Every structure is written in C-alpha cells, then in structure tokens.
Length: 213
Image (cartoon, rainbow, N blue to C red; front, side, top):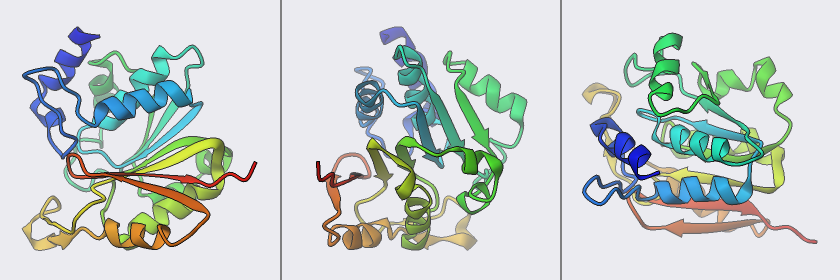
C-alpha cells in the first residue's frame, strides 16, 4: 500500500486542492477518511461530483477494488477548469496509472447528469462526495439530486465546507466566493439530518439521515 500511496502523492496535482496531503510521510490527509469510509461502508455505488485531478475518485475507486464487494464510482465533472477530463482515453489512462479501473466518468454538470439514463438507473447510492462548484445553490442542487437515493447506510460528504474564501480556479474574470458553508448551516437546522464538520484541510462535512429504527 505504501508504494501505491507514494505513486499517488508524487503527482504534484494530486497533492493540491485542500485535502491535507503530505508526501514526506506518505500522509493522505483527509484521504484516509475517504478510503476508510469506503472500506467500512462497502459501497456498491459511489458518486463523486467534481475533482481537480481525481484525488477522491481514485481513493474511492481503490477502496472499492480492495473490498470483496467491489463497486463503481460515478464521477461527474464537466471539465470547466481546463480540458483535463475531456478526452475519454486520457481519462481512462490517468486512472489506470494508479491501477484503478472502476470509475465511470461523466463529462457533465450535475444538472445534465440528472437528465440522463444512468441517473435514472442509479436507484441507490452509498456515498456522495460533493466537490464541484462551491456555491450554496450548487451544493443544494447536488445534495437534492441524491438525497432520496441514499442507501440505509448512505452519507453525503461536502469538501471545502468551512469558510468563505474566494476562488479564481475558473479564471480571474470568473472569481467567486465559496458559500457551501451557508447551505450546510441550513441543513444543521433540519432535525432529519446529522451534520458533522471536520476542520481539516479546507474542511470536510459529513451528512447522513437520522434513522428512526
């Protein structure tokens, strides 16, 4: 496993974007949680919305492959930051560099994905990771798209969930301010959801429904 982690973290792009990674001690940062949760939950279906260079899809995919149950990662990213995700063969090769072959990439926004047949066929989801456009409005849309499809042990994770920093990732002319935290403040008032903030990296928030069993 250490050799695999070293390969992952030796890619400078996969050490970016606020997951608390560190190469010096082969520390995956929040990535330990992503991998660990996927091993514990043993998902059949994981949805990842947005990723700069695939850090979360890779870790989730690796965990699912290591589980006896296997499973599939549905990775939704329209490649609006740059062209990295636009060539299907290059995308497949990128994930294959890390021996991960269970990721299905959809070159779409969530708004587009919910209109396709794959969404209609995806009746149960075990983990949803929200890391796309970091506005309160988009976080709400991403959450609403899958909230009623969560399995009994299902959960939603929001990255970049603490603070309201400004981002120029889409270009200086498209600078915007993160507001995911504002949407999560609403969810915290809803007694039907458990909401836990983890103030590491750029913040991670775990959301799961309260089960009355």
